[in-house]
Length: 633
Image 1 (cartoon, rainbow, N blue to C red):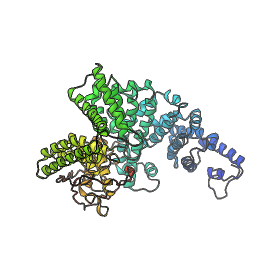
Image 2 (image 1 turned 135 degrees about the vertical axis):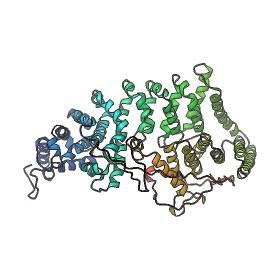
Image 3 (image 1 turned 30 degrees about the vertical axis):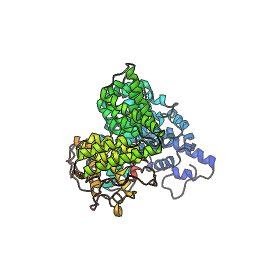
Image 4 (image 1 turned 45 degrees about the horizontal axis):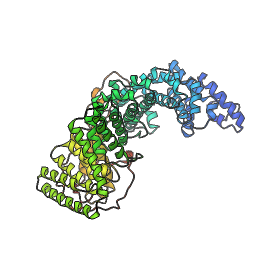
């Protein structure tokens, strides 16, 4: 503090302090700076705070500032902003509580000892005030982030849990966060707070940029709220507060967009809840949740395995099994031949084991299974037994079975081409009964062809079932382009926008890397029918859709994606935007004319692309009709 740059307009500023060459003097000066900053009313205070924010983001594990009192300083600055609105509105001080809470969150996200120091420094009470909404949703976002980090450590969780309001506030914020951001920022461009716009865009500005970032931040606000709730959900004493029907029913829809792939999202929280006996009862009692879990389990969602875990736990619990079994078994049967899903090995074997337990428990009288459900379980168990038998069969016999299946499949193709769709579906079923279990590629084709028949027969549930089986058999899992497209269409028929969107996007990704001339993207053009479906589902699954409907958003859009609703006078800082409602663009697929039985074994086994990597121009108008003929899977 004694050494000040001659050209610095702020005596004793943080940047001058950091230039001190003597380490001991610099530490003493930083210590003094942290102690004095909250009691000063000088202009330019936001500059050192933003500098500290950058340092915390770049070096969150550096202990120097923690030892010198940064947490005490940040807590005091938040209190000052909450209690002294005159100071808060002066100069650029409005930014300081946001940066202060962000700094606390950054320094506590990795190091438990830092989190302990933060708790001892008294950061929780001012963060809770921000969580209550004492300022704006922007400060709520960083407050819930910081509190979530503090709640992840065994040593600091009790301090979070002792404030009973935190869990309730987090639940309310998770449910209302999208509406808050929509009505307090997104809905009315001319009422946006300028400092919100600056924070969101970091000086890059522009209405479109602000709107896109608002969607991202709204997603983060919800996901960080779920992360904090998830910390409580591991403790059974908090489950009664969490497992209220009005909250549980919303969880499957809290998928967090595509920018928070490391968040548990709603399905991750449900998985934590279902892992505990006390949580499974309320989940099983909500039919809407079971339906949603089934849809996610039978989708290409990044969190598919979490939904499968939930269903398995519900089925294994004798207190919940009878409530869910008739809905859950058909889904698990479709997934029973899946091998590896991400880091999860032999998932299909685990599914079959649980299904077998269901049959055994039914025999002991512990649960009641309908004849249809029992038949489905026995079919998959027989398939597994059939695979064992085939291992001991002579190769010649297997070749005969394979040839017979090929003949029947070709009969099915002929019926399909002549317009006898029901007859074709029956032939594909007959071929599946003949086809050796180890001939996975051939069975992918048969299931996928039968899914196409079900689509044309307007049987979307059956189409989803067969497409899912094909995708589970395929290597890599969930990467068979034609089955993805068929399931995307079937989900569209059922109004499952998110599931349809994910499949359609993955279909486009597969097309971009396919050697199949029917599927490969020509000159990087997205097929027009796929583009139309993606656009439709992006509108239907839009993050703010529910809030826009509630607040009277006008659904009129061009390709740009912004929508402006009617003005109201209940807020000073609101905007709106949405996608257009247009032609649903569903293409009727042509004949599924299967040709060669054998398939290439050298298809590239690439990693599943990140959804964030999917991008295409909304102005693409030139596509081409793909004949989804199963020459090769």
